[in-house]
Length: 318
Image (cartoon, rainbow, N blue to C red; front, side, top):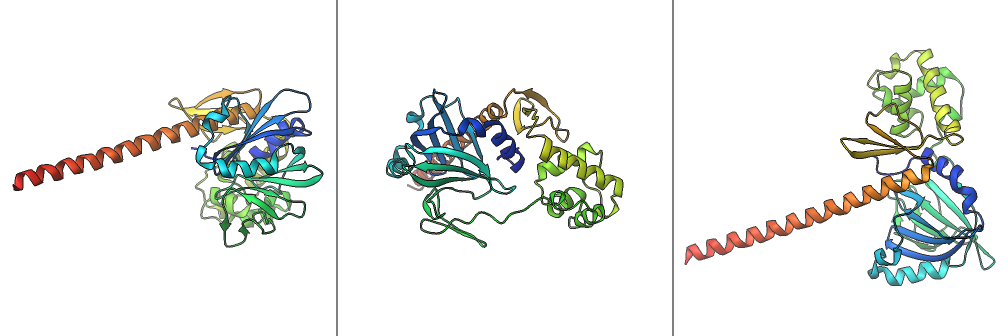
């Protein structure tokens, strides 16, 4: 099951929604959780839009938070006030993707001062606000990682770039060599070509290849097909997306800006990718909340059952 947006998803989302974000003003800010920021925006054309940013997961407008005040976490009120003091009345100048990574940058002007809101949608990602010199003013969760430190007062450093190999070389022999970095073809595309597993499985399916094949046995024609399909996905999909959600046995398993060949299921099409993202991740969050509630209830039942058994044993010993 898909749990976060890919770099391609981000590219498509920005192509679809970037212009509508320009010159929008931040009217209010809400914290649903430490890693979940909701911005109430006033676009330049009028009206109100609600933008939700979930670190490590998604960025999209949402139609499912009409009463956002009700779902905001009251325990985070102090942190929420700080976010509001830094973001309210800021004007969004533009939105961009950092390299080909799962990092979105909202460039802001706040009372004459330039700032940037960073949304990292990769694992262990954060939401951070930077000042004009790139120093972190507030962050959803401080992180110390092998290759970078993300905390207040530090200059923000994005994750190390992983530029897809097909965008850096046209040499088929070199691309074939890079595929051998994986134990099988799908891992060769992921590791050797620096592509996410979702894209790797999709291009392999489109070329009619076996994802478990020995990457060293893949011929030049197959490598050329893989390269062609990767470029088609990365460069053409943002211009002409085919948004959809795929469900298996009634359960949504993924949201895509194209009709996938590597998964089988019922396809629900959308006119806008943003709507597909919003519906999919809202339902995913709802399912997670239900699962957590059930797990907590089962844990309480187990503790009560144990207590009852202990009382019974104590009675028997009397």
